[in-house]
Amino acid sequence: MNQQDKSRRTRALILDAAAVEFAARGYAATSLHDVVAHTGMSKGALYAHFPSKPQLAAEFAKRFLRDWKELLARADDSPESPLSTLRELVDQLARLALNQGHFAAGRRLVWDEAHARHSVPEPQEQFVDTVSRLIRDGQERLEIPPRHDPELFARLVMFLFVGISDAVDAGGHADQVQRVRDLWELVFLLLGQDPVVRG
Image 1 (tube, rainbow, N blue to C red):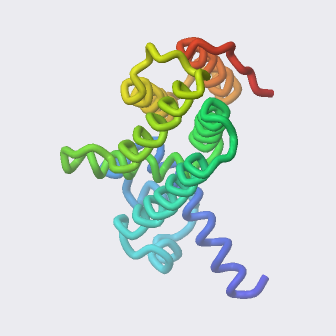
Image 2: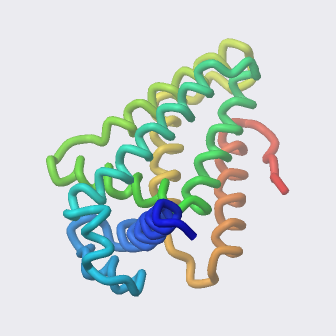
Image 3: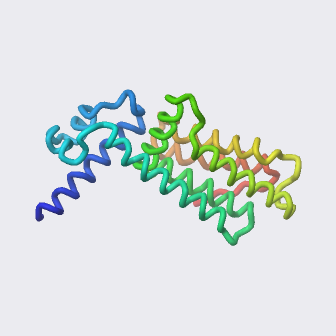
């Protein structure tokens, strides 16, 4: 393994370890010592890639914001029906929140930073705008009953996503995946649709 490959591998190990710590503890409660302990590396190895905690956190926030915007952009440009697009959007979010540690860490850090400033996370409002539009479009196409207030329902979906991201089930990952499926079944039942169970 040459030096460049070794450096990339070290950086990836640091990011994987930091993702676990940030996602579980948040920014304030995570220290670089925690990350070093998780990797088993020396402090020097970490500082060579990320000299400070803000720089390390910024890496996750930047990736999360990029992935979040791409996800919403795909929903905005989707040729599928509004309801199918909404189903795909929430399915992708659930999968990212449960299976992608870097995404979960970035989400936690962005939300923590906004809360520290006593403000609403900008990605949250972007999501509410996109989901509200999908629900309005679905109502116009008679896919979704008009009794639902689009913005209120969009906020319910947002709260479910944040709850899924923060929840830790004692039963482990398999139980958490099933819990997410059960929650989304309830969501689509509220929309007046038959639940869709994905394999």
